[in-house]
Image 1 (cartoon, rainbow, N blue to C red):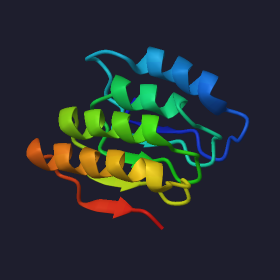
Image 2 (cartoon, rainbow, N blue to C red):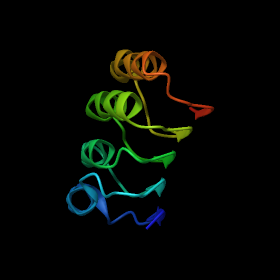
Image 3 (cartoon, helix red, strand yellow):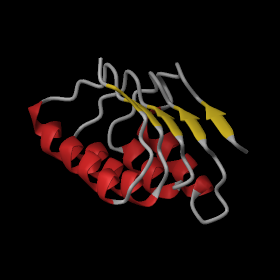
Image 4 (cartoon, helix red, strand yellow):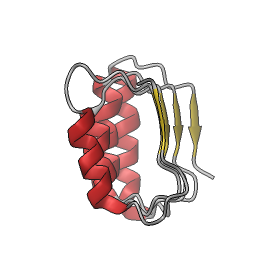
Length: 120
C-alpha cells in the first residue's frame, strides 16, 4: 500500500486514526502518501505520524492540529522523508508555533527533503 486517502471523512476522528496507526506501525509500512484532510483529527494524528516513517506526502488540511501533533511532526521530520506537508486550515495557534519550529529544525538537522510546506 503506497497511498492512503481518507480525506473528507469528518466522522473518522482520533479513534480511527489510532487504529490506522497501529495497523501501519512497523518497519514494513510502505505508505508514502497519506491524506487525512477534513477527518476531525486532533491528537490522533500524532500516532499516525510516529507509526509510518515512510511518508513523503502528508495532508492534514482542515484538522485541529495542536501541540501534540507538532511534536509528532518533529519525530516524523527527523526519522522520515516528508517532502510535501500540508497543514492548511489546521488552526495552528500560538501554542503550536514552537512545536512547528522545532519540527522544522529537527527535519533540517536530519537533512530531510521537505520541499513544500502549506500553512494557508
